[in-house]
Length: 309
Image (cartoon, helix red, strand yellow):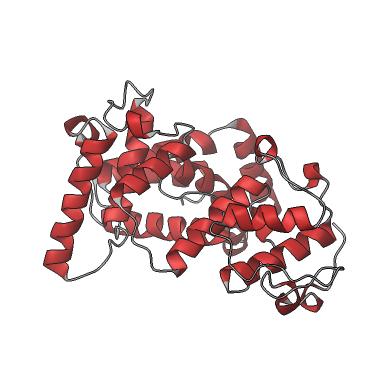
């Protein structure tokens, strides 16, 4: 990609409320209500109007070049009121993805409270099961949710709530509406006990979920392509265990990320989420490694990675 001096495109010159067009007319000073509206407005002004049926296409597919991406990012920074990372539009490479992430960040910045229903709907939308109002009372199986997806929903709610929910929680409250009502009750109880305003993330994974992570990691590390990578690193760092341990870390991170996403422990592979998820996994292993099932799989993983003595 062509590189430009990002700092030279100052946010103040791109502010939606102050920039003038070539005819001397000023843009509206009223802030767009949603991130999607703001992004579509910016792109329309750059002669790239966006229709609903192309929201999922990548920016480059829409004819946006790297310089225009810098300009879009700067104007979005002005909209949200803080500097966005230089790689923002690469990390979220379509109008739909960028707008959704920006809206999420804007909600957090405004201190908006998120309800259990919003969390559930967001998770289900991410799993390609968007909900309409008339579907909230339907059972999860009726909505096409399978058992693995139910685990992901349960795990996400556990993290949001800050306490581990029972494995049968979605069977005990088998519709979106019932589930949301019950989780909101747990939030109220948590606030009454702890005096906190919002749920915090769980300190560690529960035992069953940790074992699921380990089993998936073992299966992935057992794949021929990954074992080939391990063997190459062993050969390269023969006799230098410290160097090998450092080198294998990159492969471990590469494998752990998708596994954590697949089980709903983290939302995506964005650097901050990946670091957070790996830290949670490490803390969980530290606290639960004495459990027989955890210790057994951990030994098998160490052997696969050639880390065992």
